[in-house]
Length: 388
Image 1 (spheres, rainbow, N blue to C red):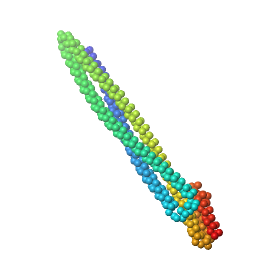
Image 2 (image 1 turned 45 degrees about the vertical axis):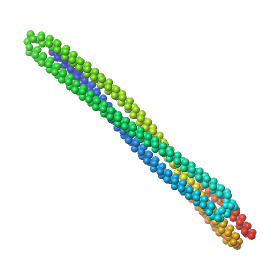
Image 3 (image 1 turned 60 degrees about the vertical axis):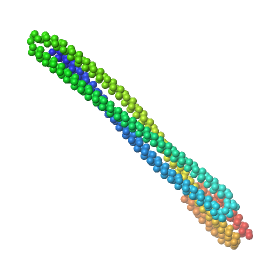
Image 4 (image 1 turned 120 degrees about the horizontal axis):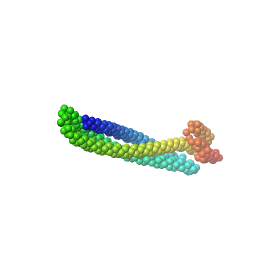
């Protein structure tokens, strides 16, 4: 009876030792799988969202650059047309040539300087636009490289997922082997217990003479069974330790992989921040180019209005000159016409000052040197012909 009690106690203790180990292995394996799957899903989602955002930003930048290029081309063409019109207005009329020979050098020099300034400003704006386009192209190239890096990282993630699935299959196979070995151990223990029970029943039924022989046989058989069971237990303990070591190695490997992936994600975030900063710089450059084009358009409008006023003055003076040559009697009539034209010009300038379309320097038209020269020359002509 003592041998049966010892065998039952050993079998129960071994089964109690194996059950928590298997439970720990299963729990660790499941938690490891869940962590790996969640990390892979999060990395995929972040990579996809970043790729989408980068594509949207690239498309927006391309559309903005196309719009700005169209606006700059339109403004450049308008400026060239204005320059051609101003040049034609200075060269074509005969009366402008006549009066420019006498007193038009300072006015012509002033407008030529303004035209040179405007041309230089146009060249500066065109250079800024070219620089902004080049920076946009560089940003686009960087976005393409980032997309390539994202594709490479997605492929590496797929490879890691394949490895994880393989390791999971290996763990499943190991678990199946452990379960099969546990079943075989249980069967062996059941057989040993059954044999011992049969022997004890046979000993109880046998007589006193055979009792000693059966006990001797039990003493011989039981140590052999215990040795076999101990050997099997040691072998399985070694296998369990090997499995634990493998699981530790795998967990350390995956910790390193997760750290590498986190570092790569931080690098991608930094690259995204740099791209956002560059996009903001490009928008600022484009806003400056737009403001410069608006200033140029305003200056061209002011020059056009001043040219129209000067042309009207020159026409009236030329008509006065021709009439005085033909008949000095119409001097009084032409003086009245000149007064009316001056009143109209004053009214136009007052309306222009009230609307606020012209700058502070160009609102003071009556104090400019060109107007003073024109008035002085007209008065000289009137005095000369009145003396005649």
